[in-house]
Image (cartoon, rainbow, N blue to C red):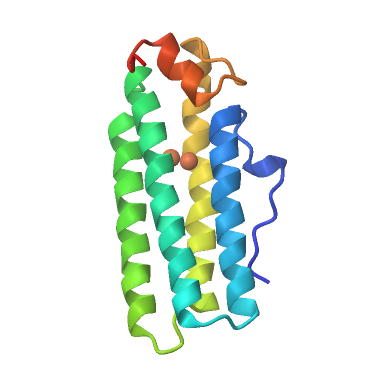
Length: 152
Ligand SMILES: [Fe+2]
Ligand SMILES: [Fe+2]
């Protein structure tokens, strides 16, 4: 019941970022399914940790891009990421302590921040990136090679 339906409202228009957001939603929905089917707390906790790990990977990607593109609101966006990671860690700790493990209340909080951050904060860097020459369909490998930051 707390699943996130992936739709156009969640797409910000940069393919690589949209793919990563989609992956986050898939992991998140897997967590909902696990809770609904009353999977054991070890399994739900492991999905929650997976969500935390992929969130870190995703945030690192966005932060690298924002720095490369000299995004003026980098600091504020980075702060929002740090706060979300901290919140996710808090939820993992809470889930570890609760006898029933992860529950729908925790999951609802994750749903809120995930969709809100994408629709309200991530969308803001898109016009800046496009103005700086990022192609909406360019994949991560392409961005990095374009800016010669990581040589093979
Ligand atoms: Fe994002
Ligand atoms: Fe972000």
